[in-house]
Image (cartoon, rainbow, N blue to C red; front, side, top):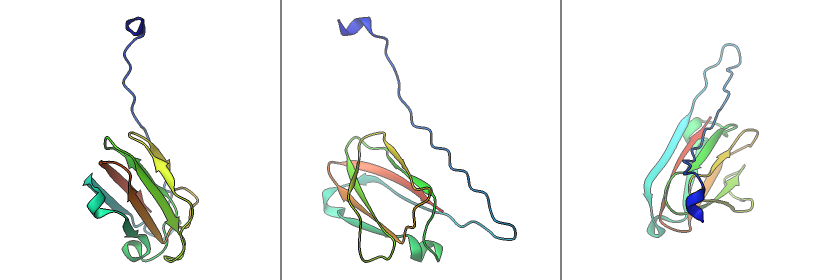
Length: 116
């Protein structure tokens, strides 16, 4: 019966609108790991150190075969709840106040993060 259904290819498109305030330059930082394993977990990404300020926009893409869990901190000390990203899922960071991001391994995966 499944042969009655058409084959579909699913993709993820993430649009990030980055208007620069007059007279300023937008800094961005990319974090990526093409082979994130349990030995590297959890990994804490210091956004504030990379940008010189907290991040306010961007995205995370889980682009591996496995899942990851993501947590955010606005002060680098306390973290909110874990959010699961499954294979091919993306999460917008728009409107967040991000000092640090903690990535936890669930199963072998990879991720790409852009923070501005």
